[in-house]
Amino acid sequence: MLKRTFASLVVSAGLVSSLGAETLKHDMNVLATSLASTQRAFLLNDREKAVRLLADLKKNIDHTLGTKEKVVALLPEELKYKSRIAINSGKMINHYIDQINETFADKKLSDIQVQMESQESLLHIQAQCYKCHNLVRDWDKNR
Image (cartoon, rainbow, N blue to C red; front, side, top):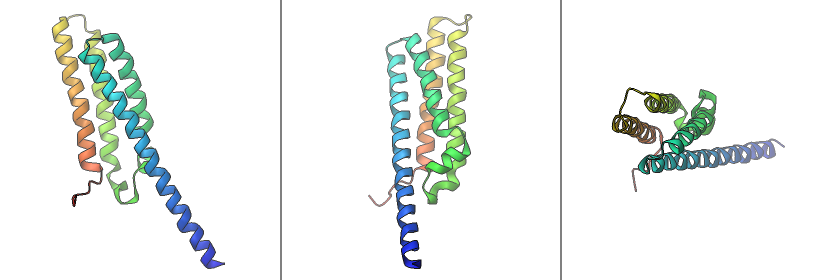
């Protein structure tokens, strides 16, 4: 009986770990797609679409990185201690999205200033994504 219970626990832990990894992979794919779509809107100078896509990116960031509980639940056991990095990156991304929206709304800026400042904030968003991946993701250094 004890062996069967232990085996059930091991199988359950493996399933939970596997589900967590799949959820993390899915959520990161959603974020990557959201960021890529936003970048495309910027490249096409489609401000209205960029605003909509930034709102979508913010929603996806909040869904994935919005709370410590969400982040800790997604990370594998050996990386849970790095959850604060992911949470802070999410906060910074939201900050830069807010900056872009403020830049778009600033009537004192010329069109070129709006483009330059909003694009700089978009680059900061991308940098936060890379920073989080570099510091949190468990890269296989033996490859």
